[in-house]
Length: 342
Length: 285
Image (cartoon, each protein chain N blue to C red):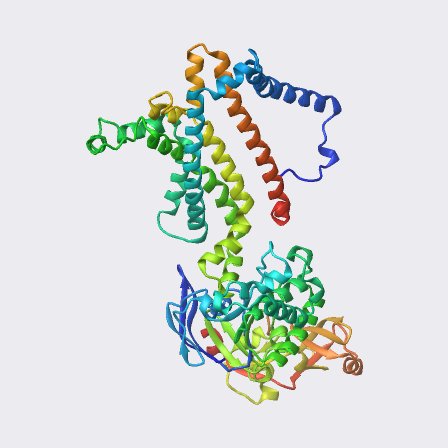
């Protein structure tokens, strides 16, 4: 089921959470809302779920206006950040909840209910733990119960709020790949909120980068990375060097005094140079597969950061104190005006 | 609220101090709590079991017991419904006047019960215009059962709400939101999610409310009019018997109240214990 948001605005007392958002999500898509905390991404998710009603704008599911429809009538599955499981019910009963609260004539019979809950528990690989209580489960297991519970009502839209936020790094990675696999099988339109760009890149078909209640850019991961629409997007997607015109004119050919070149650390080339007033290497840290190099340039406040593969680093044999020339394999140019206006 | 599970040995007092403090505490409890309780039962059966039985099955005593139970049976459910509604309102919604409502809930604790009784006498008594209208229409509130129910309800008003508000605040509303998105209506959300979550806390509040409703003296004394066999509750009946130098009968009825109190205490302990077991996460916090 597709979702179309038109001109959505929402404010809490005196804080603007969402400031006029248009977004259309295609049926069967897996979309990430990515942004720093306080950018309005969770509020937007709750607006789609029907837990918050926008001050302005419309929410449409498959063209049908649902802006004023209550959460319980939207048939949207929502997985909460802290799971919000019913602690007094077993895993089985948690998953069965959505079926049990249906009106009598739509409620599945006992055998049917048992079959469907068991199916879902198998889907999330928790068939063995049906009789346990949430307090007896690990974080990753609780997360999967929350997912099964949301899927039990056969939603056509699945919303996930920071689905992996409360898990440790290893479980997070496993669950992420598992969720992507699940989505490829069941094809439910899914939207998830995250502040972790790596997570968004690994899972999502498209990513909406949000900042201060607005969408800065909506694109697939590759476009987002190679053609960021704004300095904010560029900075949010990972470390980036910002070089003034004097440092990049030689290799970009741009002569505009306001042009700043944004260069990712692994696109930054640092080669030994005899020119002593160029950048000077400050530190070299071995990260295993890669080596992280920090260099100082007299014209810059922040250090320049370069990341090189181990083999490549060995060729140049860079060490602290050495003077280096700067170049880049890839860059994006923004003008100072764009930067200060954000 | 809960004592830490593990004490640091550095905080342990020397043995003589611990023994001294324990002795003082136990002596205090024995002198002010246990001894009076034993005295109540002692005086109650001092003239033998037959007299005891006769005192508590006496026509007036039976009517006092009936009235007390009737009053509790009305005011406890009323305050339970009100308490749940108020706690729900206060913890789940923001509205102007919320702080005022919270303060008002505490009012009966702050006001002396005698004054609470007087308020009703002034409000519904013959001197007031409302009172004369009621008399004209032959509705009796003061010096009748409705007045006693009103006064008791007023005094026991805060117990349930006070117990639930901090509990529901700590629990938050995420589970309720989850229930909403799963299609639960207000009614099934209340029975399936809210009530199981607050269940033991609610039971605790109801027990305290009930204990106070049965034992209330001050407010009821003002509005009752002390009509034997009609508007006497158990505590009032005890007072009357005692003032008539009928010590044994007075203590016999008092012993019933004490038994009720002990039973309440036992149930309260049980509920408190279950509550701590049911909420391990909140305990740790």
